[in-house]
Every structure is written in C-alpha cells, then in structure tokens.
Length: 148
Image 1 (cartoon, one colour):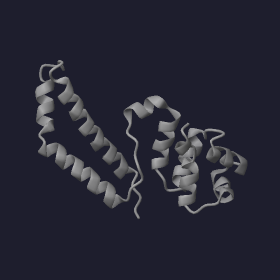
Image 2 (tube, helix red, strand yellow; image 1 turned 45 degrees about the vertical axis):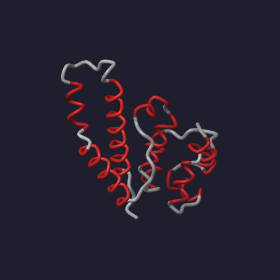
Image 3 (cartoon, one colour; image 1 turned 60 degrees about the horizontal axis):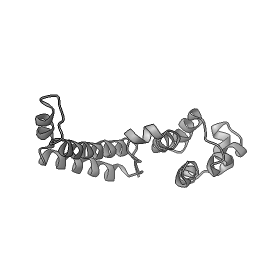
Image 4 (tube, helix red, strand yellow; image 1 turned 180 degrees about the horizontal axis):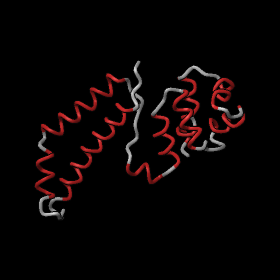
C-alpha cells in the first residue's frame, strides 16, 4: 500500500478525536491490531474498516481502503477527498452544469448511435468519459460528505 494509504485509518481516527485505546475498545480489536493497521504492518479486514467508518463518521474511509487494497477498483472508481456537504454539493452541481452546457450528452449520443466508436470519434468519446468520471467523483464525494 502506498504510504499515504497506510495512514488513512490513523487520520480518520484522529479526526474523530479518539485515542488508539478508545477506538480499539469500541471496534472490539486489540490496540496492537489497530497500531499494526495504522502503521501499515497489516491491512484491516473489510468488516473492521466498515466499523471504523461508522465509529469515525468517515464513509470515505471505505472508498480509500478499497482503492488501496484492490488495484482493479482504483482503475474504475475515482479517488475521493473528504469534503463538506456544501463543497461537495457545489462541485457536483458545477460539474453537471458544465457537462450540460457543453452538450456532451448530445455528442455522446451521436457517437453511440451506430454502436461503433471509430478512430475519428475516439478522442471525443474519451474526453466525454473523463467529464463523466468527474461527475461520478463529485457524486461520491457528496455521498461521503461530512456535515461540518
């Protein structure tokens, strides 16, 4: 796991204002196990990460964990950053409006209507997919937003 991913568990625990001892007790695991997860010596099982996300009020921890644990997941699902509800809402709305204003939906339908993406259409198709990926990322950030 990359260095920044090793500490996601620690970052979320600290953001929740919990000590390792308090978190371990509430998670039903040993302090040694939690320390090993936070130092990158071991990867926590999914059920523990699920409990962490609830205890730490950090839904984004699940996405970070899945990306760090599975390279295939990270090829499909964008990396999300924790945001407030306001920030995430504004980002999503801005991405949707930009997509609509560019008429990308209509361009996508023109490309797809013959069920073939030829070499002359590929660059535009890939650009549209990048725009859609930004919308998905923004929607996931809103889904995981904290009410601060």
